Figure 1 (tube, rainbow, N blue to C red):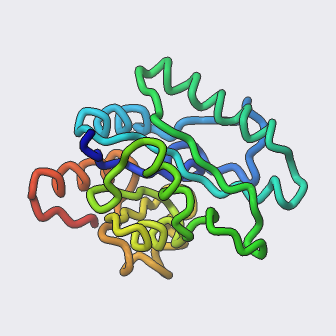
Figure 2: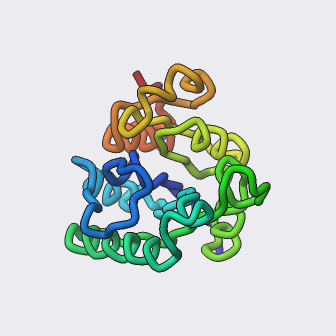
Length: 188
């Protein structure tokens, strides 16, 4: 089996609306154009892998069952749009825990690589924080910082480290599509 590339997608602020410590599935809201962008990524032959830090678990704000309920709601919403994720990986640890799975550490991508047979070097990371940009760099993938969620704020700190900066997921997908076709597309 040949390893395939993936789109590693941050959850909050990239695919769904940013809600501080989201734990209520009723508050899950897809960002405009997110489902269409995910369908386009699938058309490009990419595995769709959600990777998210959920330190609210370690902080005692909510439990693992709340994370599972949010992910189930997201899967249900995406299914109605004709999209399915290949994998959902999350880190329940806090920033001080020193784990290997909290972005920007590579643990979530390495687990997905093993589980799904992925080629990290041909993959992309799309997210709204510096931890997403650094996650991409750390696994040898290209990273795209989106200006949704916390992206505008983080662009000042790490936009220059990203391979591209995009207004939203839809524009990030077009940048990735250009890279895959060999076009030299740079985000705005």
